[in-house]
Amino acid sequence: MKQSNLGTLSKKLYFSYRLRRQIIEKINIGLLTEYQVCEKYGVSLKLIRQWRRSYYKHRILSPLNSFPMKAKKSPQEEIKALKARLAATEKAYQDEKVKARAYEIMTVAARSRSLKNSSRFQSEKSLVPIGSPSDSQ
Image 1 (cartoon, rainbow, N blue to C red):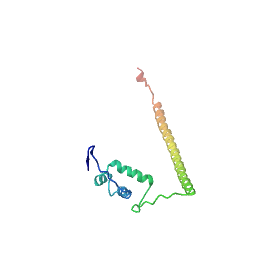
Image 2 (image 1 turned 90 degrees about the vertical axis):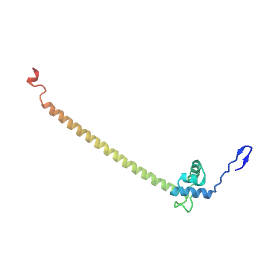
Image 3 (image 1 turned 30 degrees about the vertical axis):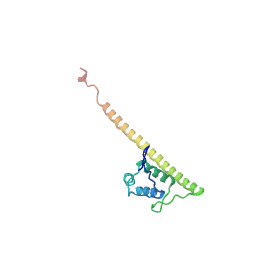
């Protein structure tokens, strides 16, 4: 570091794009943690997270990574994929409707059974005389 009249000038580190990508891939596969990278390369956690955001935003992957490159789909392929997702979502919705209806039926059955038991209890109570001749005196 050089001394100047304005104070100490810090040396700005430069990391090539390739090195940054390799570092992020090592983090992604678990060889390094973000904190280990901070210590090893002398960079801030904020900078590493910025690299990761950029990496994911641009979906740039190397041969080191097992994930395929994100290829653009033709409009027909996108429509086909979206229709498949829509069909799966509609099926899941129908399944949830069936479950909701089943829970509703079970709730009604439980309530009616509960009411039956409580009315049976009430009817049995009504058979017992409320006041006996000895109570009235």
